[in-house]
Amino acid sequence: MVKFLDKMLDWIVVILPFAGSVYLTVRPPERWQFGLIAFGLTVSVLTYIQQDRSSKNHEQELLETTTRLEQTSQKLGQLSSLLDQYIASRSPEQEAKTLTAAVQEAMQQAQKSASPKVPGPPTGLTVSLQ
View 1 (spheres, one colour):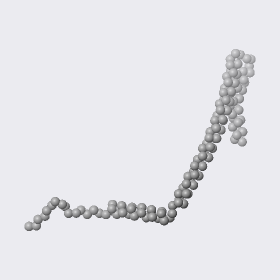
View 2 (cartoon, rainbow, N blue to C red; view 1 turned 180 degrees about the vertical axis):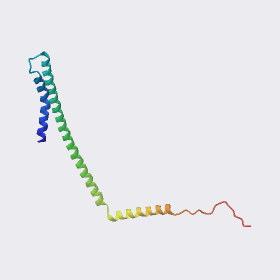
View 3 (tube, rainbow, N blue to C red; view 1 turned 120 degrees about the horizontal axis):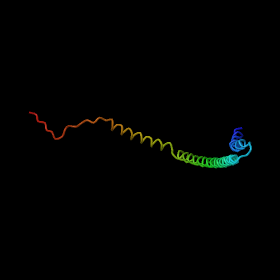
View 4 (spheres, rainbow, N blue to C red; view 1 turned 90 degrees about the vertical axis):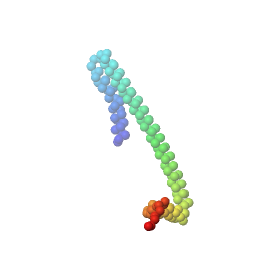
């Protein structure tokens, strides 16, 4: 239904300028009336050419978009396959060791930053008791 309406609107836009120019020249012909008919016909032809080109460009863009989507889908499938292979190649023991080492390192850094620094005795001062 929508395609039918689109086609009807396309033809109405093409025919209307020409039909309007002919309608205005129904009276006995004068010189300017032939110019008006020629103008209406020219506008109609140019409108049809523009609509045809626009339709062809739109079809080409749809084809290119479909091709790009298919290529992207293939690349995503390959990436998913590579990720699955990587995950399968990692053993749970390796993951546990890596995680344990990372946790231990983080705990050591936290202890270093959290431990209070106690100042030592000043150097170079002598105390004499008298």
